[in-house]
Image 1: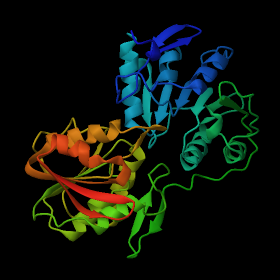
Image 2: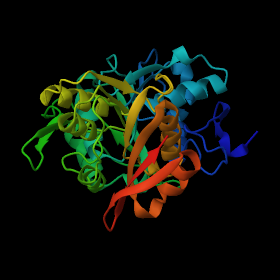
Image 3: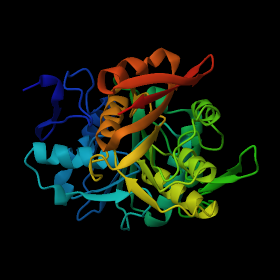
Image 4: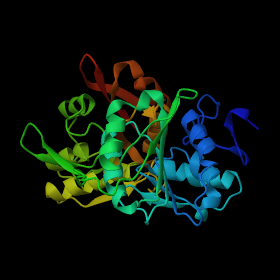
Length: 375
């Protein structure tokens, strides 16, 4: 057994793996903040408590706390799938952990809330403001993260939404935040979803955790500037759709047969749904919240649009991009095309040429390149 996949807790050892799993043990499925939280939670004795775990990346906390039958609240389908896989890997009952998407609310009241501090402050704000009505004077609220993720703005947010929030000493570059619920605190409701205007005046609706929220990212801009014409009646899939802009734009520009929007973020899919409605897109449209295209039949689409992430849950990795390219190859019809944008230094063309019959550059600028690979 790979020792890099074994996390030791006060109750014993558990095997944990990331999803997708590179299989080489270079990236662990937990961090020092998970260890620090679990070490501290041994001392938390709340009888008949309702436990909530927030932003549990690969299920390390849920698996270790499975006897508490926690709810796991996350914006990541991948995180929820990894939680199930790691529960099964340790011969534990997956139904003992209730998986709650970020677009829904956990069942309250919450007696113990364990929050992994996410990279995105907006997501944390949305979660804390929505979580507050489920807390009570006796709630135990503990957040954990690596020191680099806990800033003054993070602590200010806890104090303005929950109550006094002192921090622990750092341990293995991790820190805890101990928040105390203040029932007298006057707080605001979550400001999300929010909207912003594109250059042409069109508006986009976005939930808190959508990539490049509030502005058009440079990769998507490059893709839109160099997007080739698509055949009439094409069945188009926007893989890793975010707010859905690439798919929405192709639907406006051409006569599509269908549009499918896929993302592993629950909030991204909710944003894409709102934008399809807001833009009055008449093309038959479907939405899939998933990290893969396993639910789609092989050879079922003509065009896949893809702006893949170059990081996977706080670690830079091309595993997600590789997985997306493999999925795209499977679902494309013969002669179908995958259109990808990426930073020049990522050399996506090398990966694509190993899998597709042909790969060509359709546009570029000093930072980004737009590629078209044919099935």
